Image 1 (spheres, rainbow, N blue to C red):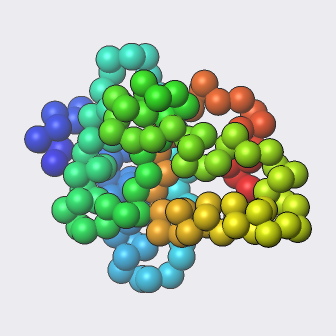
Image 2 (cartoon, rainbow, N blue to C red; image 1 turned 90 degrees about the vertical axis):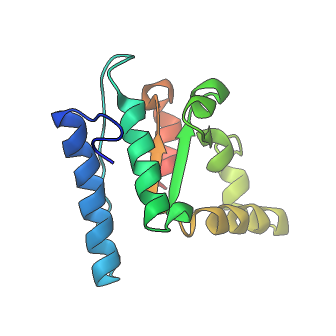
Length: 140
């Protein structure tokens, strides 16, 4: 995959960090501390190549359901074959609405939990377009 996607040394390091984390997770079957990796660089530096390699890796080991590709806008999400983070994580739903003790709130929370339950790798391309409040909600 490294050769196929033409990854350079820094991209290889990022690729292998995720591969190693997934390998250790799969090998031990114990939920490990999440890997938080920020891949930066100006447009055209090949961040999408890493995402493509990670996607193909997940497909090869038959764990595609554990990967979520997202972006802050429809165009960004579409460019990487994903969905908007707002859609995936229900960021447009008010926090107090999610936390309320109503049947509708329970249904919203359950839907979100079911959608993210298998997720082990969340990629948010162009994350700097998100505000601090959105990132805070994601961390919850």
